[in-house]
Length: 529
Image: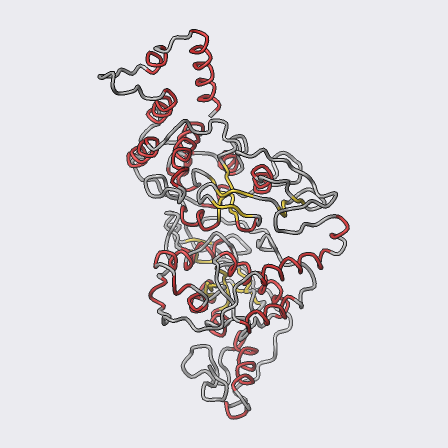
């Protein structure tokens, strides 16, 4: 970027001083066959020349491992990691920070890919303009881990990392401009210019299809791209040592942080209140097949289920020799509060179940959007590894009908449920809203807003089976009741289901109350769904 900007600036200065209009044509080494056809604009010639200087390589490159590229780091020692640096830099209004100045809580952002604005940082993903998987197959596969981490956290170019809507980041995935373009077509010119510039700076290759797509996008330019890549609105940044008026979100000041539990609870309740309440049944029947299955969206040969297992393991995982499947690891099942070393013990659960999403507005979605929901990895809580028994027990039920066995998880459960419903613009029922309010009231402290595991996770790839990790013991495990009850012992279905949910995670269906293995006990009892 700096190189191209310098060339442009130097050339335009020379042209201005000489007053020679023809110098533009001679510098670009272009000719026109007809005086009726205007010469190609100089900036476009330079961009096309920069694209032409990139090495073209259509050979496939495998072996991408997301964990080789690191994570957000605080590289300048100011306690703020790269994600929050980008949010701070790109906000169009003064941001609100925590009192320690380390995290951005409020601001006002423009999502360049979609052309929409937001005041919620949780709505935004900080996107690598040229995705990690694309960088890997474009030459990054040969980089050292240190260089990969430098790429991950590069703040030297304001467009290398860019705040975009979570949905657009998910839709883009690891795809290049030959496979994906921003929804906002007016951004295509800037998108191509930035893509070319990043590939040049990091000496990455392009494919033939990529070149063709970039040339087409450049042809859409009505004028030169934003060479400085600065926001169109001047941004001012203020730390929250005193109260700031932010667009729609209240923010935390030191006085409020002394009563932090009150403030975050207010914000969550406000977010819940903003959801549309709809108690009407969906006019279209739910069909599981409409929502697709696990996909490999980033082209690393690992589908979404195994991406989740790899991400959530509390110890290094063992992979099959091709690196495509997780074979061993160590997981914590949040719903039940139990640990396991066997991935087959776990289901990857859609936090908001597919059938619930269908009834909450997903019935109107296109098939592509449903598949996006099925495979959404942009939010670490959207898909979560849980014990198979808890997943079956939960089924398609909302928080008004089912809650995790581990009551200490209710606060986080409500927070994540509300976040997902907000991000996907889904409705809630009156009963669901009431249950969520009740679960929020159980919070002893703020939920995990970053949604990261409480234990730092390291992942290693192995070509052989790893040694199993000792299983941890779990507190508050109920004694095995054995086969001591029948459905007739319960006065209604709710009592039977409560009993089933209490013991199933640990001992299975010891009472043989669930004859069809659908996670619903005593379906003949009154009140059964």
